[in-house]
Figure (tube, rainbow over the protein chains, first blue to last red):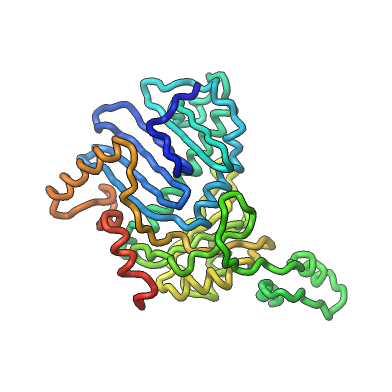
Length: 155
Length: 203
């Protein structure tokens, strides 16, 4: 089941938004967005231990944007049929929107915290593809953000 | 030894005939020329090699970060360090694994202290073979001049909240509690800062 995302942007390449419930630590969410020109926006919000939202912006080179495309293509997420994926539940939801090679795909489903979450669903294999793609995204985004913004501790 | 010069257009002539080891090397060698650094623009769906981002590269907080793609799935971190040791001393490496297979995902991000080291790696490392597979090297980040792009409503709301927090807190943005790092928020005036630090200014 596809829900149209808010204000889909013409320049967007990939947009990922993951949110949990609004609980003890505020409205916790993780979000990143990359447009066709390489502009990356990253946001991570949690009030855990009185932390506040973190916003970062950065422009990626075309080579790096291309590597995101390669990761998306290799995952074959665009070949999946997400109509059988569960809608959001009380634990949260993710939204993913990908525009590349002239195709636009967007969907919303539950957050998958572990492979165990994929087991009792109508499409465990497809959700597994999504799970690993999200892991690959998070790895790469984390590396990018920490290399560009984080000062190394004094060894 | 002979594999250092894979970037030349002239195929290596093997003057030493047929020992098994030479044959092995010969099989590994790329007989075709590596693609030259392209100068034309790049259209979204073309399969031409992408232009390198040398002129508009952006410095990161403590150095210059390059992206290496086409990394062999069995590459080890020391292979990357060795590969780039000709160009400079790498100060950081992120080579992430594919979480499903356990092999290397296929890219690596490396940081060099000096622009010239990173540029050397981009220009001369591209097309070279690592474990028999040619890699592509480019700067990871480039100058952005338009970070004020309009976005979703919740972005604007979050920005307002962030502005209030910045004024309240004397130490500005933090990275994460539990770490030792204080990080100034480069995203706020990124375009100004990138002009200050651009190579043309002799940085």
